[in-house]
Amino acid sequence: TTFPRNTAMPTPTPVVSATPHPTAHPSAHPSSSAFPAPLPLPNSHNQSGGRQGPMSRLHRIASPSDLSQWKKSETCQDLQAFVAAVGTACNGITTAQRQADFEARTDAQPQTDGVRAIARIVDQLKQLRALCDTHPPRVDADRRFGNPAFREWHDAMVARAAQATESILPTSMAAHAGELAAYWQGSFGDRTRIDYGTGHELSFVALLYCLGKLGVLTTSESADIGLVAFDAYLQLTRHLQTAYNLEPAGSHGAWGLDDYCFLPFLFGAGQLMAGAGDANEVTVKAVVTDDRVAEMRGGEWLYVDAVKFVQSVKTGGRLGETSPMLCDIAYGVSGWDKVFTGMKRMWAAEVLGKLPIMQHFVFGKILPFDKS
Image (cartoon, rainbow, N blue to C red; front, side):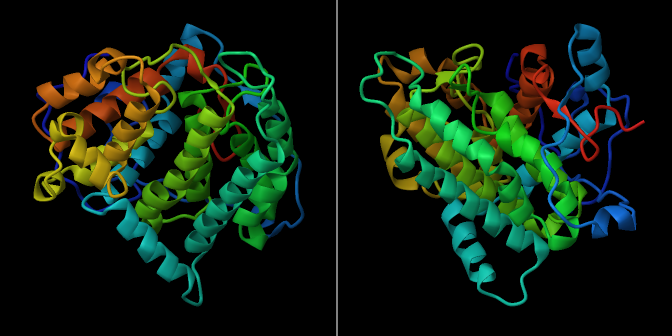
């Protein structure tokens, strides 16, 4: 996909519960102001207690015609709008600043369902990080990719998935823990192939989206979704990649950004658009050309942190050779607003619009293939 270089960024507007037209194609670029409207759940759904097992996994996309129908669906547009809304909400806020603010809000009483849910997501991710110490990489594994100890870690993660998602939900919504567990289990790589990629990242986004559809997460937590919950997830998955030598799922470095993930660049561009980057001396070009920016500002901006991580793990050549898209953006795109718009287009086309990724995605009641 060609990265757009001359596309104006729409002026951010307040987050609203809006849904693009159901027949729109991903290239229509849904508004960055949309957030999923909560589902009109009947009382029996809201009040039923007790844990359910993982939902029946429905793989609905198996052919090009299925994919074409998916790209026109309302759910596909809603996912794009959700990601855009999170990126827009992060504008001008540093990662460290938002995390410090969130920590202060977790100490406040009473907590909202959204704050409590994100705090518990972070806690569950920390517990999964601790599992890496319980299942350390095998030192005798003579393979370039795929330390088999990852399978042991993955089994332990799956065994506690329903319990993890139940802890995230309010008690009155415990019946949905099984459905959410399917997305939780799909967020951390493939046990058989010992790999990780943007499809797994999408599964975690689907979990967050479902929490929005259930009304647990609201517009008030939009920036927390990107800078607290997603960043905690990102740190864990990076550790999994390096500790267990996970293979990049699908094409290696498909976009010349990062072999494994996409959204740190999208959310990171959202942080820096609308003048925030220039005001903080973090220009599109400087992120790649000025080592001091990556070294000193990585903890503040997701995009900078992502470039810094790429540089730390891709040591076999210059950045222009290992991640050509990053350099093309740095030298060819004039501002963060255009980077943000371009990243939204790329994510829609190269993740939601690709059969090798979407054939593994599961659908359920909260996130249906087609709402009709």
